[in-house]
Image 1 (cartoon, one colour):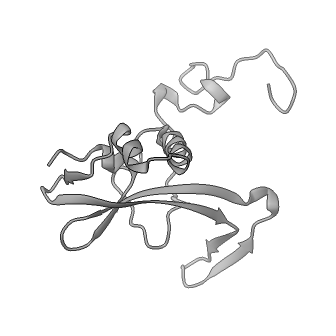
Image 2 (tube, rainbow, N blue to C red):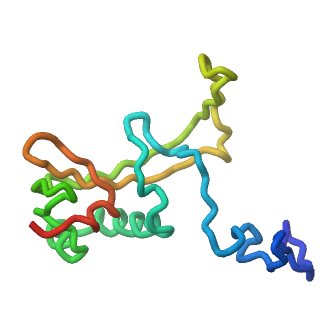
Image 3 (tube, rainbow, N blue to C red):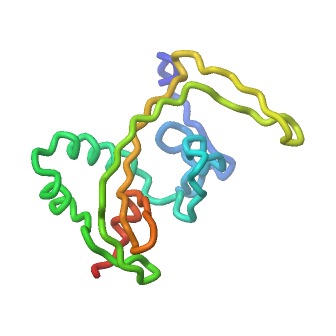
Length: 159
């Protein structure tokens, strides 16, 4: 169905195969990759695992919703198998200090001008304003705080 109209023809890729769900699936079952990271904060560095689990954002949203209403947050974290003490991949001992959830609202967009020395700013119309929730687990490694996402926490090892 396109814009309220049904049609009976197949959409095909260059390889002759029928298009997948939503007609926008990449050929060969590959995930479509977007090079931009529009929701990365100015203080966040790009991560090698940005293409992690496809539905992790849905899992994170479910976690945030349930965690906010949990009468016993400590037990909730145990049930969710979030380690209170763990080892990072480099062997550093980590201890969980807090769980942070933020509501982020994107209200503007920037576009760099050619050469990158300046940029254009546009406030977003109401229909394009984006609301997101962010989830971070803040661990202490003996020296500094390490904010980790849910996927990173799930990759931690037992102490």
